[in-house]
Image 1 (cartoon, one colour):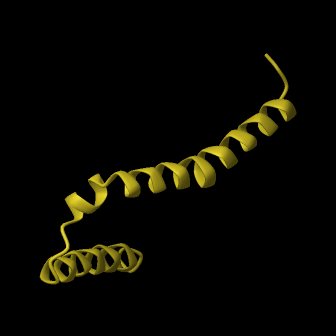
Image 2 (cartoon, rainbow, N blue to C red):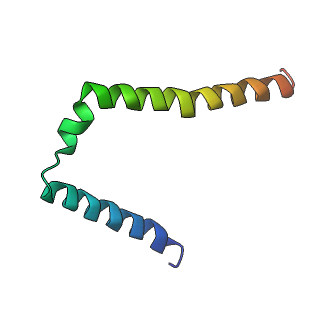
Length: 67
């Protein structure tokens, strides 16, 4: 049970954050559907997640023996 406190705490913080954003009038659906935000998220995804994983996959395939 002790290990779940961090996960549950994170969920509670996210929910509180969403409530606070709603209180100040921010609509997450409008923000996320914005073209600029979509472009920024796509760039970050491709640059910081896909590119390193592709590099790692290529390195692993060159190290592992072929079947």
